[in-house]
Image (tube, rainbow, N blue to C red; front, side, top):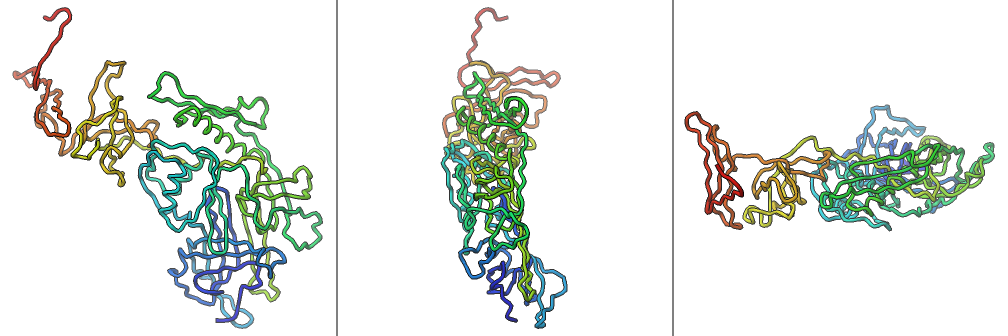
Length: 529
């Protein structure tokens, strides 16, 4: 190996392979609020056959130096993550003046959080808040270092389903619904995932202020902004939510909030109405409506710019000074940064360049992530098994005052086949009046058909029952018989009695049969003929 080094270069990479085994030649990366960062790295090495097992999934740290800071470690920008992709190029090796041969590689650097995109699951969370759910999922991947910075009141969710959804998509949509953003705090040894709903934004490390380049003929010694452009756009002016709560059916639940819009007329003229609003009470509905409104208001006015402020990091704020339009001076929250850099490794003069493109919003505007992660839609009904306390050996009938039951879904690997396996689920009947109608309650062990209101996995509804090999037809093999046959009940004890109403329609054997296991009572208030 030669003596090539990244010391005194604009950027470098530290890998488990050892110092300067891989040299960083170029970077193209993107950082966003509430998205995992991704950096495509161009790499070279005198080792022509690096083992993929030695680098894929391993932690690395990229360093980018600010102008004039080659000897000042305080001005180094760190980007810490893991290698998700490693590519060995067929590009011919580069031969240097000292006859060293450098082979070309490419890699993609991502946070540990990205690993959640590689995990898909179906499971049920009950009586947990969104931070509780996110905390559980993150801690299943023990490598992820994280910190919550919350000031809002995150309500407990009675029933929340992850269905055929990656862990990443699941927590993304929950965080979006609660108005919680995330970004990363990078160090030379790790990166911390920060989850926050605070209005205040931390200042950008090593770049709390950014100067606008006034004289473009100069060659400044500090990182500057070259250009800025401002964009304003029309956004919705009002969000209205409505929902129906069958436990309080007299009146629909409604909540709304009005914001600001840049269109003509009043904000109410740009209303977004959503049903179902998916909220449990009016206070929660008001909070959800406000979060939706603020997620759009955060994009009503956007500042875009370009420069070489290498410390710019999404999720942090800076103060712009001496912009061409003085009214643009002020504090901004960085929402996006796209980095482009070339180290020009093989130049004797150490030639290199770094530029970035960034987007930001006024720092006093609350930032909420847009609710763009789709929620799974149940494609049709499913079947499940009715369960109760004690599992198969417990109570045969387990209902509440609304005749609801609990079930174990076939896909739920974490359920224990007991009364904790699901929420209470309503059972559709042929009639349902006020203390009149039909009442057929599925019992423990019955297989039932479960549909989902609006295809929402969080809103199951039992629509019927089906037989299977263990629960067989009451008149198996007797196709001309029709009827209803119940089963006597005595807690968790097995009994064999029954009541029955049966019709036999076979020609010349027609029969109408009634059986009472104990008493038969008939009451006629006027006439019986």
